Image (cartoon, rainbow, N blue to C red):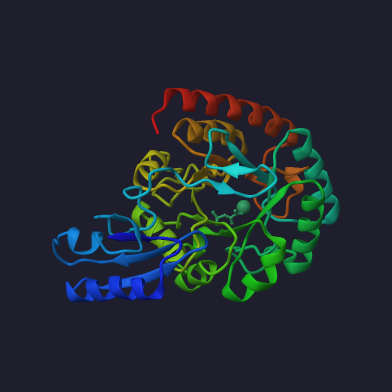
Length: 339
Ligand code: PEP
Ligand code: MN
C-alpha cells in the first residue's frame, strides 16, 4: 500500500496515520523523496482501506500487490519523465539518445565526440572513467580527473553526462560532474551503492545484472526509490545465456515487460547487448520498436584503437545514419502505441 501525503501535512497528522496503521497491524515506513512524501505499508492480510483513507493529510492511497511498490506502474497515473534540464527529458515521445565511447580516453577524444554529437543533435554523452574490466590488467579508466574534463567540455556545449559509478566512496566526489549516474551490470545488486544513490538528487540508470531477472532489476530500482530518489532509469543490456555467437543475449522481450510493470523509463543498450559492431544498429532499432524510451550506444573516433569495447563501437558515419533511423522508428513506435 502506498499512501501519498499532502504537501502541507502536519507532524500530528502523520503520527495519527502511523498510529492507525500500527493499530490495524500494517507495518509501515515513512518515505521522503526528492518529489514527495509517502508512507509505504506492507499489509500481510486483506484490510479495509476506509480504516485509513479518511484520515486528514492524505492525498491519495493505492493498493499495490506487486512485491516492489514504488516503482510499480500500479499506483502512478503517468510514466516518469526524467528532466535533465536544458530542455532534455527522458521518457517522453522523443527518443533519448546517449552516445559516446566505452571509456573516456583523452581530452582530444572528448572534443572530437562532443563535436560529433553536436552535429547530430545528440544531447547526452556516455563514457566511463571508472571501468569494470574482467581482467585487472586492462585499462581501468581515467578516474575523477578524466571525469572533470569530460564534464567541462559537455557542460560548455549543453550536453549531459552519463557515467558509471562503481563504489559508494566515489559518489560524493563525482556528484558535481555527473548528470546521470550509471550503475553497471556487475553492480546491479550492490545494495549499499543503490542505497547511497537513493540519497542524491541526480538521476540513476540501473543496468540489468549479467544474469539478473527482470524482477531483480525492479527490486534494485525499489532500493533507490525507497531511499529517496525517484529519478531512475532502467537499462536492458543483454544477459548471459548459453549462446556464444554474441557477447550477450539482448533480451528484447524485457522491454515491453518492463514497460508494463513499471512507470520508469526503459533504455536499451545494443552495444553490450550484441557486442558486434555490425549488428548494433539493427538491435538498437529493434529495441526502440520494442518500446524503449532511449538508446545508449558506444561510438569511437577510431574503434580499432579503442582502449575498450572497440569491437562493438560504431564509426561516426554509422552512428550518424543510425540516429536518424532511430528517431524515425520512435515516431512509428509512438504511432503504433503498443506501450
Ligand atoms: C559500459 O557501459 O561500458 C559497461 C561496462 O556496461 P555493463 O555494465 O552493461 O557491462
Ligand atoms: Mn563498454
